[in-house]
Length: 239
Image (cartoon, rainbow, N blue to C red; front, side, top):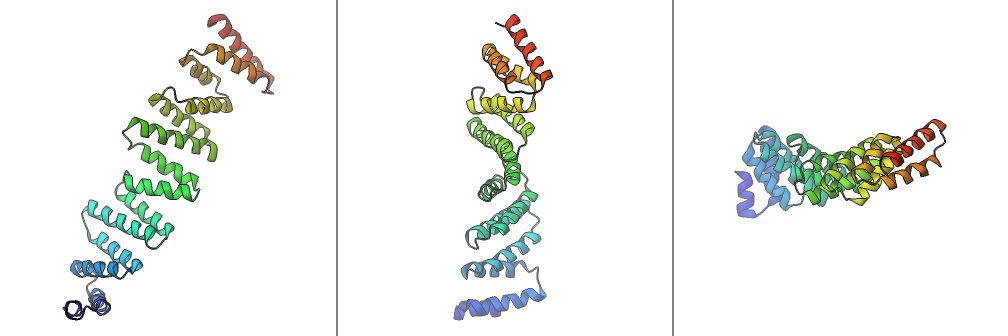
């Protein structure tokens, strides 16, 4: 009541907040008071207190969508008003504990981790976001980016191969994915998959040229002999 008087008769937000905070010391779960101070903290740009009271409201709510919405608001305040990217990231992570596929949270974390060059977390978030993309073109672009990070930034060649294979199932002629997966098979010395890769497009002459080039660069005699036999088989059976 005192807080309302300060606001309505004197327009004194500071005194109103003080009165509400006194009430909350005795009744910390009074939702009507929490909502009132939430509004006042926002008007006065007291961002840290605004986030604190929003989180109190989150804890009181049984509605998961409402909880996620308030946490999104907190994360946005932390990022845009407080410029605290660490706090913002932790809040977006909290959103994901409620909804692991929340597209807004995943997109924000993706941008944040890319900006910070935290490639491990970036790849994890992007891999999760990919699963929620329905449009083939957008999904293909995200898979290409994921494969590049897995291969070039993290050295996770086998993961990159799986990502590029998924991309090629959507876009069989994607030249970047085809070039990257060919390099990955060679790095892994997975000669059966390399053969299958060229065979899918009936590019046997190119496959033989690739094998012959590899023989000149690989140092292990056993591998050289294996590749020469593979080339000979293609010459006799495919060309």
